[in-house]
Image 1 (cartoon, helix red, strand yellow):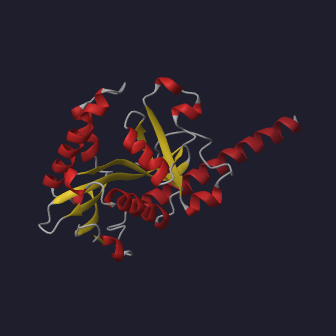
Image 2 (image 1 turned 30 degrees about the vertical axis):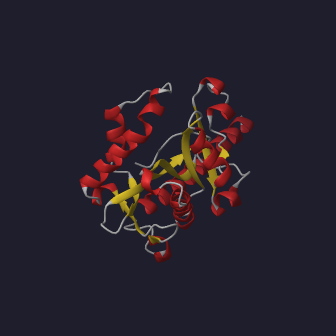
Length: 240
């Protein structure tokens, strides 16, 4: 009887510990989402003046953006990505993509030219993946006139900076295997790794999947790497 009682107490203690850990993770995500401007402490990153470009960078929640800017971002995504989606098992689902980009949880990193016209953007969210607080990059899209000038790398580096400053554990993103340029860009130029949750690593779908999940740990993530994190390994969002 005593042995069963001790086991029950240990099980309850583990549950309470896991719940407390997940509460702490969600608190960090909630705190990040309450920021007005994640770039306010980094004014040097609010401009990009290299390789013939002179751009202003802003970081804003979708709810504070001009709807025309979000519509521009959607149209650019469709122009750049529709064919790639159609080559995957997902297909191009316009309504779902639009809903995703207008979702109130969305944040946008926007690059604007001298006329204040947007020329590049990242769509990202602060979220929880498998018990860890992460910054998940949904899109990074550039107009053709500003490509191959270091801007894409700069925007992703800003996301890494934001992830570090908000104590996220990783920057994560999904990339199509057949989008060879993007895959090489993230793996080689930006040193992203295939994440443990990616189909090729987790044993789910594997070679049948047309995409990989990539990630790069922040300094906070590196410090906790190898330790068991909260949430009991549950994958998914919990903080909205």
